[in-house]
Image 1 (tube, rainbow, N blue to C red):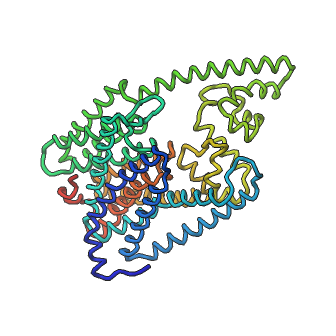
Image 2: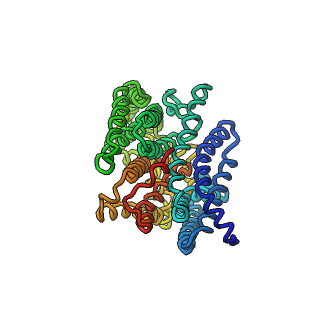
Image 3: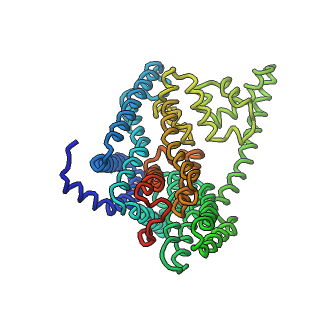
Amino acid sequence: MKKISGGGKDRLIQALPGLIVALFVLQPLMDVLSYWLSTSGMGNTLSLALRFSVLAAVTAAGYLLSDRRRVYWAAAGILLAFALCHIAAVLQADAATAAGAGEATGWRPLLEDLANYVRVVQMPVFALCFITFLRKNENSYSAIQKGFFAALLVIAAVELLSVVTHTNPYTYANKSLGILGWFATTNAQSAILTMIVPVVIMGAIRRKGKAWLPQLAVCALGFAMLFFFGTRLSFLAILATAVGLAFTILVAAREKKRVIAVLLVCAAVCVGCFPYSPMYQNQLRVAHNAVLKQENIDARVESDGAVARRHHLEGVHYERARLVGAYHFYLDGLVEKYGIARVAERYDYSTDAAVITNARLAKKNFCRMMMEDAPSLSRFFGLELGDMRYHGKNYDLENDFHGVYMLYGLAGIGLLALFLLYFLGLILWALVKDARRYYTLEAGAYGIALVMAMLHAYATAGLLRRPNASFYLSVILSVIYYLVKVRQSQGKTGQSAPETEAQP
């Protein structure tokens, strides 16, 4: 890579705060572009190229500014070596795939799989780069605070425009519930909001002066966006943010204790309005639909059971025969690929609608059986992304941790776990060493954001494999490193950055 002059490097360092804020503003704008490209049927090639260009530019800046370039080379070596092993596993699986089996083969699915790999590795790469930025310019931290606030304002403006123009695609599109805005992926947007809101509210709390109106306005905006978004995790984020920040203020920032009332009142309003929330309304309709599905299943099982009895089937043969209609209706892809006998055994011959119609469980069972049949190398380095689609239906797991295992095997999930555990270890080390010094208002807010991120990774597929959401996780991890390691080396451990720097 071509080196830059000392003067050019200094100018880049000085420009970092502004570039960081611009990078935050760009994130929701790229999401909006991706949404409209998809809506218009133009595909995601342009938005994908833009994201990869941003990743390349940020990586180049991080490498050029770093005083520890061996870390970048080590990371590149690990990621490249793993990519080669993953490609070998994919090719081995393709060689064992029979023609017409309905699975992905050839170079086009392989390119799509490699593009998805880049999306996944963006998270650790961005985290590494932001750590460099925080080391090189002390104003980068306040720029990150401003960036979070700017991103939230852009998202709020997009949501408002979508509602005013009647183009809101809804969080639950089939029920016309929830304000999603011009964003394509519900779970990813839920993760983004739950990570941004605690940090932005914390920034408002840290402002100088005792005026409570700006704090109330920011808190009300953030909680309202979470409330009207309508997922269970976004509602949980309201409670986690209110209770978590209130506790943090009591422990680490008692001079701000008046703000506790603002937090708890805003949360209480959301709880009081719960019966009118999109999330609650969605759950009511889900429960109603479950009753209808159970009636459909019972009717199909009874009909097929009657036919089986007329043919004098008994034992396991009878149990399978009575399930054929219901399982073909709700689990058609699994039955077609793996057969009724194997699928019925996997589901323990259940006739419970909550089990049979559970899309999340169906995808998990599909992938588990696929991994059972895969060559040994796949268990260590994963399967191809295209294999998660079968005859046009998507069976990609709705859980990031399981999804990473399926796509990248034991080695992939192991590397991810080591990366995340490093930052969790930093938090535990700091709290054990001197909780009073390290547990600040900032640490509490970023801790809440990290918890919500991990909950999304556990419960959805909207974080680790979505570059628009994983960007914010990268920043959160880099800030955790900064609060524990960098401030310590600068002799600022346990001190908050000047309050004026944290103003949105």
